[in-house]
Length: 219
Image (cartoon, rainbow, N blue to C red; front, side):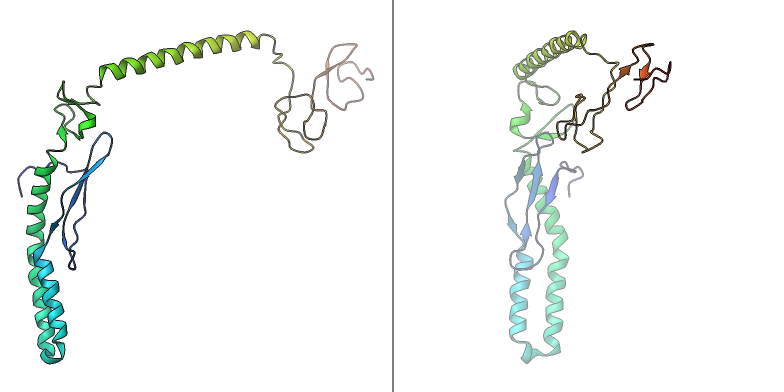
């Protein structure tokens, strides 16, 4: 094989070693969008010939006996011995072909497809994004940021009337319905925990208490 092989981590080996459908094929993917391209299928004639020869040996099995078994093993071994070298050569051809469908970024060294390539800059769109697309994206981010700021300010203004000191039950203790802080449960109508102040000393009186814990006044 050549001393330098690209596509080292973004390809799949689709080669089939056995049977009459034996052959070589590789699938390469764009490092940015992960779209794929497959090399043309190349049949492995050594395995195909071995398969047909093995079938012939099987048909003559009764005549050859144990000799037929030896012939079959020899045929399989011969086909297997040539597989590795043939695959390496096929991989080199596939890489050469794939380089016509992908461009290698000089900055990040990744291979990308035509849709992910900035031809004007000679870089991938990850390293050299399209100016018009970036401008539109930045405009949308600015719009979203300003809308968020305005909404936050509106929420702050509305929150000024919210009494954060009032205790609220978020789940009804009777039926387990979520109450969202309402004074009554929407599921069963149970009155939820609310602060009660003593009329005499203004101390907080627990729900269900008959007397004020601050001054003893009967509720």
